[in-house]
Amino acid sequence: MRILITGGCGFIGSRLALHFAEQGHRVVAMDNLVRRGSESNIGRLQKNGVEYLHGDVRNAEDFTNLPPGIEFICDASAHPSVVTGYANPIYDVSNNAIGVIRVLEYARHHRCPLIFWSSNRVYNADRLNALPRRETATRLEWDAEAWRKLSSEERPRGFDPVHGISEEFSVDGGQRSIYGTSKLMADVACQEYAQAYDMPVVVNRFAVISGGGQFGKAEQGWLAWWAVAHWFGLPLKYIGWKGKQVRDILFIEDVCRLADLEMKQISRFRGEVFNAGGGAANSLSLIEATRELEKRIGRPTSIVEEDAPRKADLAVYFTDNRKVERILGWRPQTGLDRGLKEILEWIRENEAELRSLYCSAG
Image (cartoon, rainbow, N blue to C red; front, side):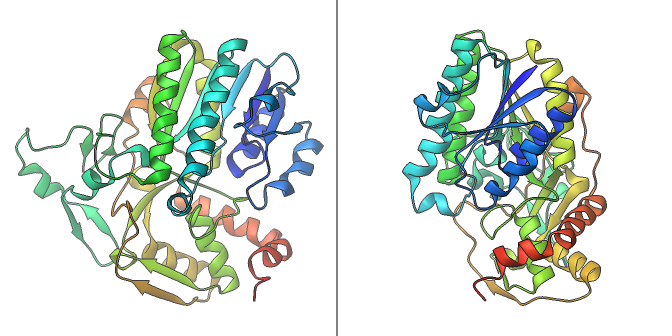
């Protein structure tokens, strides 16, 4: 099969491209190389038989340069930062919302099935932060006892303190960030196109995705960035909640496995939405990540605290995977121990390159 991966030189896109190429598919990776570090993936992709095409999903003309015979699309293109979206909202919307319309139009005209990379940031941050929670020594966590005391009318749809946030949680009202809004626009567009034009489309609302090879930074790709900062002794910051905010981590190997399952069964779906993440078992706070990395690397780094959380930031989030497990039989297999080990091995093997990227200012 000939597969187009937009955002194909980014962390997710490049790993998908290599994964599919290893399976014998012909892969085209389209990318505008805006993301720092993405250009370093071109040689590895080409060495493994992936065709690279410079292109921007915002430009309809760039799609005319695609080779003929594209049969399947994975749209992993996006400007992924919650933080920087506030500085330039038009950039976020044009990349993440208008861009996906271009992809959908190409898919519609060429009758290509599509897997879309959405985000848990489509959910209402105010509603998420209003869920009952309690504080422990190292993390914030949802308070199951307080939740059980709520009446059925008071319990929000799509929330379970043990399993997490499902696809039924509200996306209405409140804040979700400019980035989250742009992803919600794209998410809904994919669902609408699937119904309006009878297109095979799957929407995945992913948790934090990480793994070796991710050029993380403070505003995006936090686990890889946390590991890099600890490795090189770079300063870090807890912003709000004393570093006890929690996220679930989904490692890239499990993302590729999910894409495999969805591609094989794509004809079943017309805009189906799946939440996919590491779940409660792969959840981690900043403090917990710090302690684990200090133990593995053998040295601390400087960390300061700011009291006020960022706009639309989340105190606690982890994914309810029960729907995707029920329908596709998928569940995450890479745990935190193995995932962190692979990130640190990648840093060790690429220390010189990463030092030049992350430490040049010093």
